[in-house]
Image 1 (cartoon, rainbow, N blue to C red):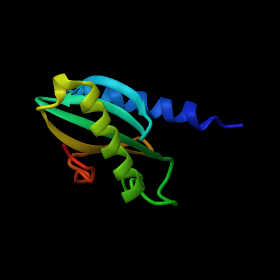
Image 2 (image 1 turned 180 degrees about the vertical axis):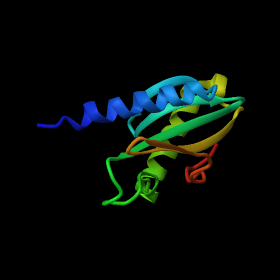
Image 3 (image 1 turned 30 degrees about the vertical axis):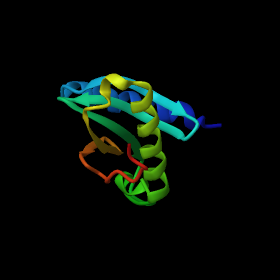
Image 4 (image 1 turned 120 degrees about the horizontal axis):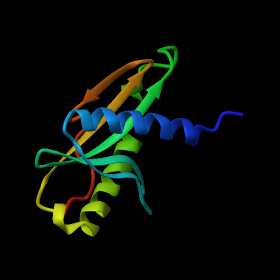
Amino acid sequence: MVNKRNIGSEFENIASEYLKSKSVVILDKNFRSSKGEVDIIGLDGDTLVFFEVKQRKDNLSGFAEEAVGFAKQKRICAVCDHYRAVHKEYFLLGVRFDVIAIDGEHITWLKNAFEYTGLGF
């Protein structure tokens, strides 16, 4: 039996290493709140970035970057609001929502993959 959580963690680790190689400072992985979970939170320069990691073995069920629908975007934004409320040291930083898409051996970093859809402050 395949453990999807273990597979997800493996790809999140691959994404983290990729981001570190691009000078992103990883702040948190698998951050959870009552609103949901975000795979990776990091600093890209002076921007606080919430990363969703999506993976596909092949393109039969679509590309990885297509797998972050509006409902998931809303949950990530709600988690962002919670994270910034708890971690006030990042509150004044700009925020961005990115997707790390892993299709087979190919990694694509989609910056500004979607706009903020939360309540705001």
